[in-house]
Amino acid sequence: MNATLIFGHELLGKGYRVRNDLIIGWTIIGLCYIQLVFGAGNLYIFKKINIFHNAFGFLCAARTIFEMMSSLLHISYSGPVTLTQPTSFTPILGLVVGAFGYYLSGMSCSLHVLISLNRLVSVYFIFQYKILFSMKNFLPCNMLGFSAKHYGYVVIGCEDGRQPSFNVGTIFNYLCWVSFCTGAIVVDLCTFVKILKLKKMKHQDNDKMFKRNVRFFAQSAFQNIPMFIDIALLSLGDNSLREDKALFRIVSFSLTRFTDLINSMTLIFFNPEARKYIVKIIKEQKLVSFTDSSVGPLHNGVGAARSNVQA
Image (cartoon, rainbow, N blue to C red; front, side, top):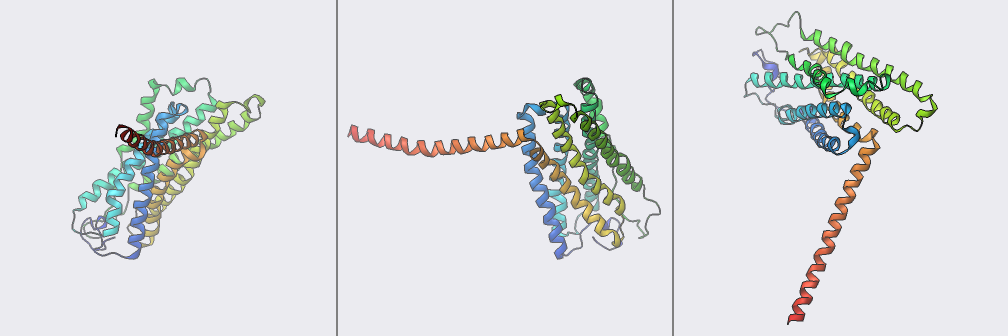
């Protein structure tokens, strides 16, 4: 981070690179690139596999899209700026990118909570689930999830170098940590208790719908763990410009990229249907490649034989 007293200097590079800049920059780019690959695969799976053609699948797809947008943002700005540490650009660009990055993170965080609520409704209100998460109610649900886009902030120092006496962003950080992240985990615990009760019912053992709900819950609950840790570090760091909070800032930002990557990978880990579909696609591609390589020489041989006969 630039340590001068120029207004907005926090958003500029130092003008020189050190080893940590290279490590952090390439880590950001690497995590974002892998997330984009898995995210694109997720969207394709959501489209092709019928079990995801429901509210849960739509919410996961919406979150994936915004996480991919976040990866594109950081792979094109945050990573390169960290690697090169430039000083010859306007801080306004950093303000815009930072605010937009917060919008995307807020959307993803909100959708985490909605997905947890979706799993809660699916086990507590089985017969009302399709009504509650119908297309009629889906738009207001999405509006709630995307409400986080209406706020965002980027901390910069005062023009005379003083630290601000009060940071309004602190309220948003702790509110998100307590209400969203902790709330999502509480919802997951309630869902888990209900699943244990349903498990004791013998007729649920071989119920495909029940097993699918368990997998979807496990996927949602697992994704909430890194999100909780990430927001906890963000709150503790509080975007402070002090050097003793630098570790919190770096780890929190990097963990956000890692959380997006984990979210895109859990679909494959927790759903055998997704794994089977991927294996099927790979086998089909191998079969096409083998057929093409086999048919090519055969046609060439037939053509040569015909030429000899005509001669």
